[in-house]
Image (cartoon, rainbow, N blue to C red; front, side, top):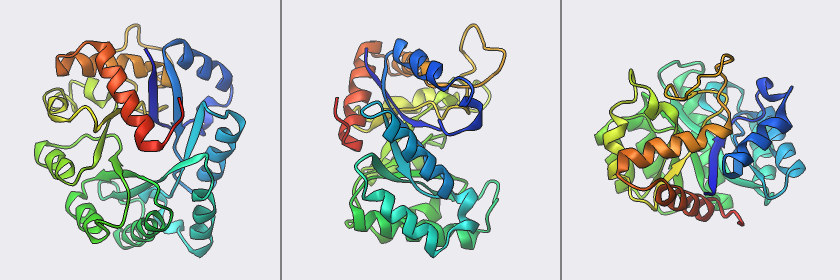
Length: 263
């Protein structure tokens, strides 16, 4: 079984002390390739550095998360444009809107998101999207560039049925994380994943966040890591009524096609 983790925050400080071991555990559990999320100017630099150090295993995205939108300026835009020209950078983002916490003002989020949509128009690379409590505004921004951007994936989808079908109607891809294993917040996803076409479904851990609550034994440190992608895949396969090998093969093929990864 081969898997691709389309969203892993491997630049996070919690991985510094055992980074090589984390990668080795991931490979042991079938994770053949990983996309390292760039979510700020420095995070984008760090994600590219990891991709350069681990060719054909790690790839990077380049973007500014809505939490960091207040820091988005002309220098940041220039940095992202340069990174998007690199073959190791396979997507624009993480970008989008987050009205749940509003760590950056909404006006700043909209500005940073719209500028990154223009960067996606320029470079033609797919979009790695974040959305929380901002569904209609995100759709409006995306509709403004419809027909001028490439593919898009809604990373870590946690929404309801109407949101899912709004995305599918626009040909967006859907990223599913261990949120589906959370009986408190993610139980509704177990039914919704049945509606995602196989060629639009991708899997991710969002490590070190969102450790699947159904992992046994539960690690004492509570840190999520890419090795648990196999567990997420098994849960999604069960919910879709598929053999796990089928879910894995389809999600991996979709991810490699979406990001242009070589196997």
